[in-house]
Length: 495
Image 1: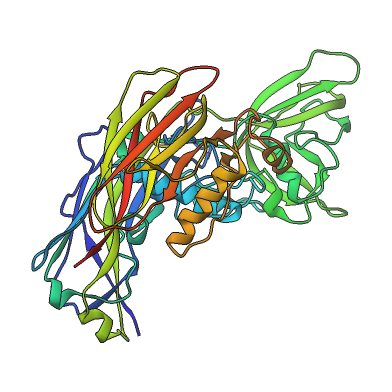
Image 2: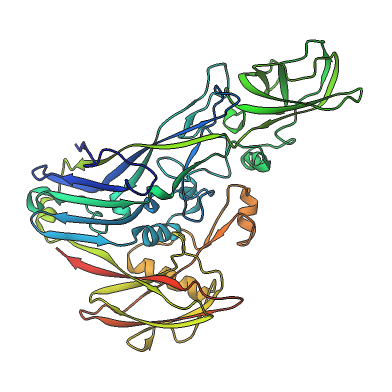
């Protein structure tokens, strides 16, 4: 049976200033065989958001990372690691990955399917646009009753195998390797807070997976209201399943109502104090901490309740960072004692004039099996004007013609590269769906407003025990190239 040990970072404090973003964790010798494939680094974030005019209101927030796609449902946590390395006391440097965020994050977009990319458990930016109102990992949202919802700390897991090639093993022998030090330079300075419980039309998108009889904000008319006004309203929509309800206890909302006689609309900011099911239907009765209508008797129509976002206080705290290692209870000792063979990424960063074409050459290390070109103006690899490209190895073309972006030949090279790693491509859409888009909008076009397009040039190359010369020709249309990119060489290493 596996055992789990937690090892805290050598550093005790972290923040988003860019000055406290180094994490060192040492895996001691003498622990036996460790399953690194299941092991991970855990970062505990806490989001605190408050309104100046209502300190009791609750607004669960998201931990976002500026990958150029912060407000999307993409949440692979490898984007948190800018650079990383691992050193064994007995065998020296095991792996050193420069710009791990660029290569690992972008490859994860191809490797993972849509459903996995939108899962929010233990990830960043992790909200599913097709079900915005589910009780998610950043807060305990009370959808029925009168107990106040709470914000809570959130664990983001970075699997070691998502950033290190050698960590794809279940049998890492700490006795043979000695103490192993993991070093991470984190992108904490790119972390921030956001929220999707805000006042805009994205709320209607929750009904992509449910029924949508009318807009979410509309409430039943009130036929007879006393002069003291009302502090409760009833939703027009019915919610048989409360996970699709956008209403929760402690939520700050704007309530608008109009007296049928023609008086001006009354607008009141109030906090929901209770949510209850109506006796004869699945409608919801929302109760507030104050009167939400005008102080006048009559019939009220055009009643709307709209959530309020954009709090005055937005704080992100990094409570702690620790590693969680799985001790293999049933190790394969033959594999543990054998030499380790794994893939490493070598990075060559390059800048060039931002013109409409570029013809560049790079020396690729020996034992290289795949090459990647990642455009690095942001973590997300984007080159909006790239039209086609050519790749050569030692002056021989990998493909005997220019490869057009978004063409079948481009996607064939992507598939061949993944096959060369014994993997399959999870998605070739090369687009990230924005939170403001519904399921149907996300699937109807790459250029839909709020979506983010990305591209990585990749190809398998002949495997040789000597360095090779890689030629990269890029051609743009409609504007200049980005002027910078990183060439990654994926090589085989034996330890």
